[in-house]
Image 1 (cartoon, rainbow, N blue to C red):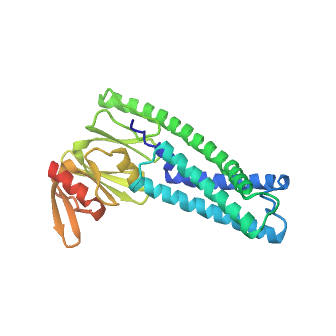
Image 2 (image 1 turned 90 degrees about the vertical axis):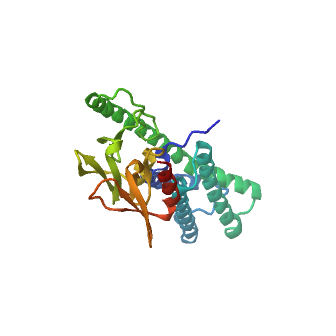
Image 3 (image 1 turned 60 degrees about the vertical axis):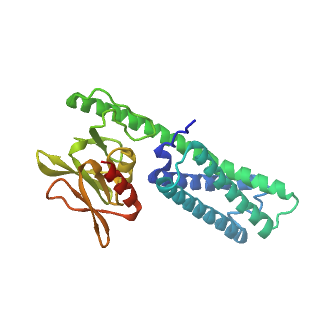
Length: 300
């Protein structure tokens, strides 16, 4: 059975930043409370004694850096190489916890030389404490993101219903945890970063979409002329929303409507796309997307 793709809100950049920040702060608060009560694997932890405080600070700093690098890697792999599912996401989180627990065990055994306990006990206790310190905020933040996404879906539904009443469109499918999916492929709805519907246009009228910082600009045909509409969103979010449609990523800055491509020409520095409308700039095609775009163009 095909496993469902992980909800996008769990690997959004801003949510990953929020989760790491909250988790680190919670872990520090947890350790501050737990240290005085522990006489085993965290015996070397101290927020008061200078020597032990240094090791405690080093452990917290390196663990934080590790979490940040891990989430950066998760984010970029999810965009380019790996289709994340719930099992993969959970395994990734558990791997983070285990590795941080092993790092704590190494300091306990190799540097601080904690005695009176077996290696298995120290390693197990270290992983357990790490799981409590990080697992709880991970779960709480993920549930919070799910709740916020459910609220987003409800807001989108209300806006889409109003938009459908104006356009005459009868059906729309909205899936929690995924971008808005239209039953009518000829009508394209553009939402901003918060999921609010901002712009509706027929697919046949779109030429290309260009990224400009935290905004995207949609270039489209309006009564024979070229118009543009700007909204706040990321080009990657737009690409993910319309994956599988003629709106295809061809460059880190551009998405093109392959139905309106007039020709693809080769220059010294690579491919360029021209459209079936005068007055539009030529859009570059990067090496990353060249094979996909050329293949799609030959199928049109």
